Amino acid sequence: MSHKMITVDLIMENNPCDDYDRDMVQSIIGDGKTIIDYLDLPSGYFVSGISDKMWVLLLPGVLDDAIVYRIAIYAATQAYPIFAKAYPGDSRPGDAIRARRKWLHCRLDDYGLAAASAAASAAARAAWAAASDAAGDAASDAAWAAGWAAARAAAWAAARDAGRAAAWDAASDAASDAAWNKIYIFAERLIRYSERLELNRGMV
Image (cartoon, rainbow, N blue to C red; front, top):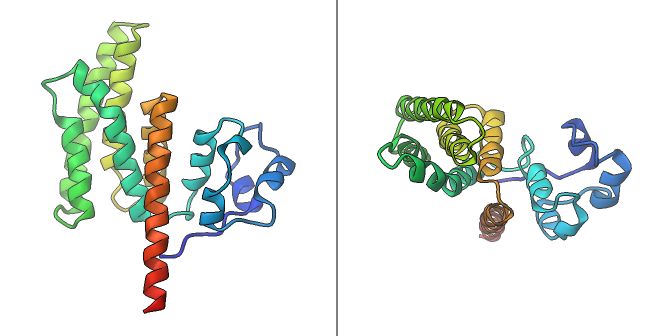
């Protein structure tokens, strides 16, 4: 597996937030970073810390698709307990997360994955309707956002860019700094492990 070099042009082409003009990005990235060099950068270099660092990792083509989908699953898993607490009798978002895991291991086809995602989306829409009725209730808002996170994690079996959006949105729905840190640590370990495997293959 070959991860893309992270360059100033790559970041600027994807329209970072206003905090990052070209000079700012240049000061962080320099002439370009390998994925491992990028992981080694202190999060303090980034305006919003871990979440900004994660945004770059999820840009199109930076990571292998299988890694992105695993990050999406993990992020949705962090958000899902919020939904489960509000709707303990509705297993559809959890089923969608499990469906994506099965799909990754070739134990579920695209049609089965799409069905699970559609069911989770229906659950999220129901939660959204409940949140609308309880306008201003933070717990209700968090529950429907978590339901969407699970639906997105299972969606788009073949669409790379959408899969990356799913990972990002699911992480955002987990919301807290602690959740962001957990998601980033998971992603970093997964990436470093994949790089070690690739290195070992090259030595055989």
